[in-house]
Amino acid sequence: MKRIKKADKDKFMERIRKASSEEYETEWDEKGVARSKAKSEIKKGKKSNAKGSEFERKVRKDLGSKGRIVDKWGNNVNLEEDRLVVSKKVFNPFKKIMVPGSGFPDFISIQHVHGELYSVIGVEVKTNGILSKIEKEKCVWYLKNKIFSQIWIAKKGEKRGSIEYIDFSEKY
Image 1 (tube, helix red, strand yellow):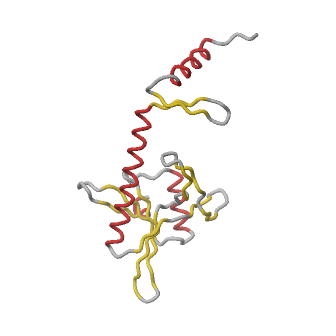
Image 2 (cartoon, rainbow, N blue to C red):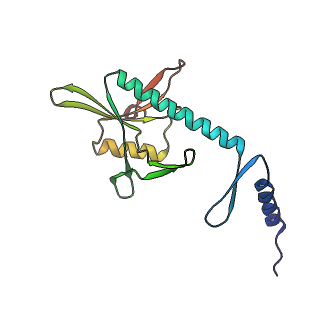
Image 3 (tube, rainbow, N blue to C red):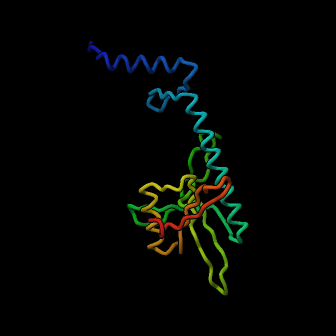
């Protein structure tokens, strides 16, 4: 019989302690490995998710009040294959249901300019206005392939309750 290293034993005992603790919530994956999360962190995540969803609704309402038609964008970019793909359905752990995957960017916004000319803009909602490296690459792909004429990043403004729109082309 092999001897277990002290570091591995301590790690294993810590997992057991967390699994039986009131402060942690433990789930087992398909391989039977326990994953423990602090209940305080779970609560924080739920609040962040709710605030993000609330800000998305606020942005959508604001764009609608400016005369733009706004809809959820259900597509995404596969950078490896260099093509547009339909977003997959994802599991929402909070509601315990499958929901349509959110595409990138979050919204498509359309406004009639004149005649048969329309302004088609992609809108990504970020409370802090910062995009990840992959999101920046996707924005460049959308603009290069003329899917959108512009991409706006909606973020919370300096003044409480205000929304600031940043043009991706100007910022990056």
